[in-house]
Length: 341
Image (cartoon, rainbow, N blue to C red; front, side, top):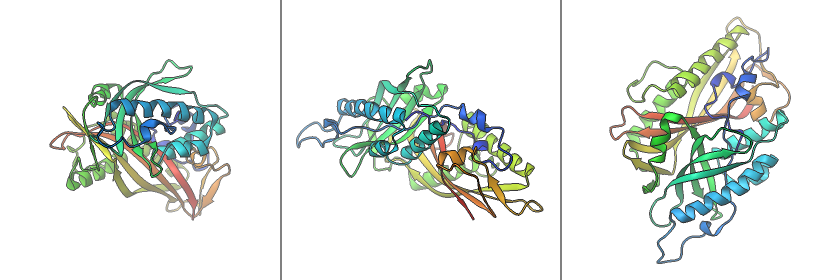
C-alpha cells in the first residue's frame, strides 16, 4: 500500500527529452498504495438471522488487510497484491512497487490505527473506513480513507484509498458509526455528471464550467492543475504539446451521509496524448526517468509520432446536500499504460 503518490502533480506525468527536472521532486511525494485482506471469518456472509456484517467484522477485515498487504508491499510482491486489491487501488499499488524497485528502495510496513467505519446495514458488499496510518520508521502519521469491496471470491479487497489533507480530518472521521449507502445511489445522475465534468475540467486548469460547484481546492486547483500547466510549458520548451481527454467517470459502490455532506469516491479515467507542436520535431519521446514510464514498468525510452498515456485518477469528495460547494478531500493519480503511435 505504501509508496502511493498522494496528490501527485501532473507535471510529473511524462518526460520528453531532456529528462524532466521535476522527476526527483515527484519521487519525494508520499503516496499510499496497496491494501487488501487475507481470507478471514469476516469475509464469510453472516448466518441467516444474525445481525449481519457490522463494525467488528469490518475491523477484522482491516486487520487482516494490514498484515497481508503490508508484507506484500514491503516485499514488492505484485502477485500477492493482486489477491488483496482491485482497481483503482491495485493500479496505484503496482505503480508504487515499480517506483520502489526503480529507486532500489523497499516500501515501509504500515498499520491502520484508530479506525472509524461506515458500514451498510445487513450483509453489505462494500464498506468505508478512515484511519491513521502508522508507517514504520517514519514520524509521519497521515490519515487515509478507504473502500473495501466483497470480491467474486467472497473475500474483501481494497478498491479505493486516498490520503486526506489536515483540514479534512474532521469531515473524514465524521463517518464513524454512520450507515453507508450501498449501490452507488447516494447522488443522482445529474449531480454525478456535473461533478465529474467539473472535477476533470478543474484538474487541467479550465476556467469554464460551473466554478461554484466545487470549492477552491489547494489540491485540485493548486498542485494538480498548477502542475498540469507547468507540464505543458515543459513540453512546449522541447517542441511538443499534450492534451488530456476524459474517457469515463465511475463512482464508488459505498457512500456515507455526514452532517456536512455525502462522502464518496470519484474515479476518472483519462488519456494524455503527446504530439509534436506545430513547427516542432517529427516525433515525441519519453525518457526512462519519466515517472509515467517507471509506473508502467518501462525501462527504456518510448518515442513516436504520438504517445498515449492512459491514467486513472481517484478523488475523495464531500458533496453538500445542494451539491454546490463540493470539497475535494484527497486525490491520487497514476499512469496505467504508455503506448507510442
